[in-house]
Figure 1 (tube, rainbow, N blue to C red):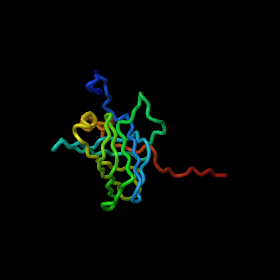
Figure 2 (figure 1 turned 90 degrees about the vertical axis):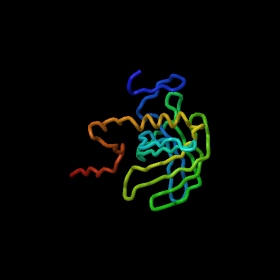
Figure 3 (figure 1 turned 30 degrees about the vertical axis):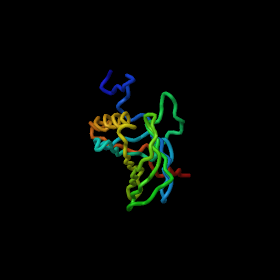
Figure 4 (figure 1 turned 135 degrees about the vertical axis):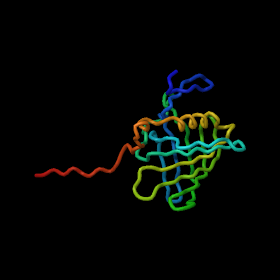
Length: 170
């Protein structure tokens, strides 16, 4: 096993780079997030308090995977919500369904979008210990590892961005 892998109970190696997409379907309160996002990283994962934990994830909204989940590339998790309320400027609370580890629970999530034109957004999820222990462990390991390029001082950059049009001279 390499330093880029961990092992679950099933002894299946898991890469320590977030290469499994996350599926989001959130609509309401002037917020729409829909797709399988494959460029994301866990920013923080808190410990268990009273059987609860939370995970804050940073997403690049320009990086969606059009392919459906497969056995080789399953979604790490999915979150769907039609109940969304704005709780502050650029901050929303979504009440919906989280699916991961073969479990499904109703959870609250906080979604934060930066002001201005940014391709990034944050999603903070509450995790129930008994239902999502494997997900919490995987996110905790990913959050503790340096991400590709970080050791060189590189930051997470969007996969797509607005570009100035190229004009041809006649």
